[in-house]
Length: 84
Image (cartoon, rainbow, N blue to C red; front, top):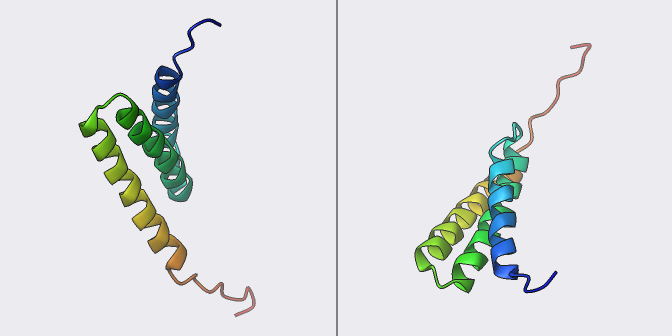
């Protein structure tokens, strides 16, 4: 492979990650995969000097982290005994 454009590949991988995240039923998995995709898109935007792409995706990645922290810090529901 001559002249592999790693920045373009980064953009494609980011696109695939975001698309896959939108197919998830599990909100935690959706947020994690979307976070990775947005992080890659932010890096891609930075690499090609597309500041709106980098900024918006960094912002969305931050939103994903915020919600993941809320999910993981939420008290877990107590399961009732089957005999009760």
